[in-house]
Length: 151
Image 1: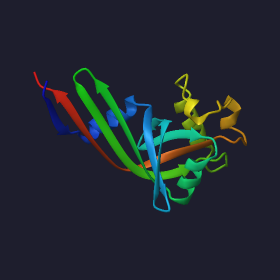
Image 2: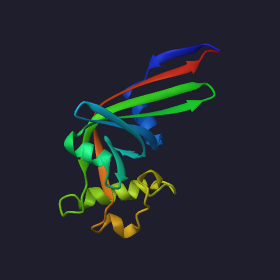
Image 3: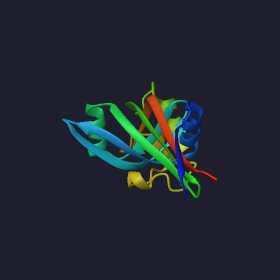
Image 4: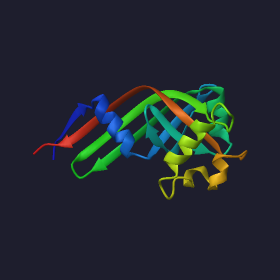
């Protein structure tokens, strides 16, 4: 079965991000790359996620430039989207409270959204001082490729 490879349109890339919730997030510190799986939700140019404190958060605080890859495999081929963007935290402050609550509302739609963060936040975690870090990746660039089988 031969596959036809093509570049995805921006609309197709957005569609895949809207349908996806699992990807691989890459960050870099002092020339050392680091990649890890995350759950995310996409809305209007932002990928929303959360984490507990740790290396990933430390590195993204030091260097906000990040990259995320997600894909979809099917019986007839595959699609893959790579985005580059900027990390932004949403602490529970007056200024960012609504963005934090928006992230919470998008993420909690899936029953296992918290698993990669290692400690399930209770609903009040989005509204109070907790160790949970809600953040967004503000997308700066996006590109995708698709391969579909020919008939």
